[in-house]
Structure formats: C-alpha cells, structure tokens
Image (cartoon, rainbow, N blue to C red):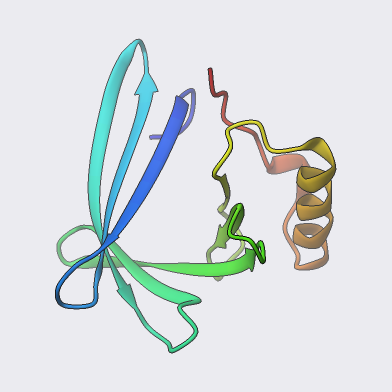
Length: 120
C-alpha cells in the first residue's frame, strides 16, 4: 500500500487493555487512505510487538532503533524484508538519517532498497 504513497502518518494510543491502537494515514493517487490496526506488546521492553491490520493475522513488528529523545524510531521485521524509519519531524536531518542507515546496514538490511516517503 505504501508504494507510490506520500505523507504517511502513524499515530499510537494505548487502550484500556494495554494494547496499542494504531492509525495510519497516507495519500495515494490524490486520495487520503486510512488504516487502523491493533498492536500487542510482547515483551517488557516494548521492543517486540504483533500488529493486526485484519483478523486473524498478526505481523511481527520489532523496534530495532529508538532515539533517546524519542525523535525517531526504526521498525523492522525478522526477515529484514521491510523496515520503517519514523520521525516526529517529516524532514529528518540528513546526518541522523545517514547514521540510521549505517546501523541498519550493520544489522543486515540492504541500504539500496530503503526508500524515503515524500512528505509535503
């Protein structure tokens, strides 16, 4: 769904059961799309989640990098096929972005396959 999309925005809210309500919006083909998901935290460090966009399937969602000031986070999956770099600011500083890419390469991700989503 993200291929060719722009202006992706993900928001999180902890619900009364300790699960995470996720809302993801993006623009594609001139239209805004919205998806809702539910996150299930799997460990005490909040680094391993299962995310459900539709029942009954739950996808692995690993927090593999997190800024100490919570300005960005990096989410990956076990097979390293997908990775998301999410920032509070749509214009993440180039030095920060390059540093994240370096760490991702060290973890086995292919730098050349990582694409930035346009935000305007």
